[in-house]
Structure formats: C-alpha cells, structure tokens
Figure 1 (spheres, rainbow, N blue to C red):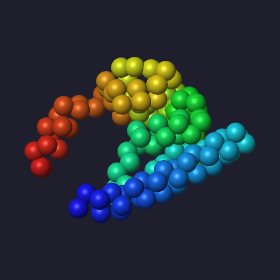
Figure 2: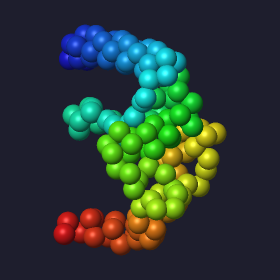
Figure 3: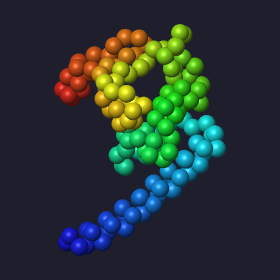
Figure 4: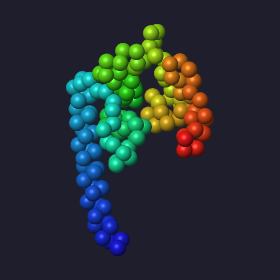
Length: 136
C-alpha cells in the first residue's frame, strides 16, 4: 500500500512545487517591474494556506518583508478603496497588531502576536478564545 500511495503523492508534490515556483517567479517579475501588489489569498480552505504562510511565500518569492507588509496593509486597503484602513495615522480606523518580534528581521515574526487593536481598542483575545472554544 505504501508504494501505491507514494506513486500517487510524489508526482502531486512535484507538480505542486513546480506550480509554486512558477507563481514565485511571476510575483518576483511583477515586483521588479514595479507593479502594484496587494495581498489576498485565494487558495481556499482545501489547500489550507493561512495568511501568515502566504506572506512568508511572498518573501520567499523575492519581496522584502517591508514590501510584503505594505502590500498586505496600505496597498490592499487602497485597492479596495478602504480609505480609513491600511496604516496607523490620524483619521484612520486604528486597527493594528502588536508583535513580540520584528517582522522586518523575519516575516515569520508576524505569527508572534502580543496584542490586537480594533478601532483603537484592545481586543480581549482570551475572552474570544473562551467564547469560540465553548461552541457558542
């Protein structure tokens, strides 16, 4: 049974890696050419990519962590014409995340979330976990 599984999985993994490599090369070309790059994952739940993985993939494709963060915040808000979002500034919504490590050093540091603020108020993440975990 293991050989049959392997015969099915190996070609699928090779094809998936080739597709990712193609996407990475295309993103790098677009970024180098100065294209306006926003953030959004269209991978769906069947693939299981998270936003965090998508941002790391953008860095792996050749974008700097700074470029990725701007794409995921300011540029994406601009593309969607959400003028009150996208950056911390006067007149904006004040939605932001406080991290325990610098994402400019390593984009994976975006996973080290200390606090979340929405409209300038800290989100009670413990209460949210408790509520969501209870099934209500």
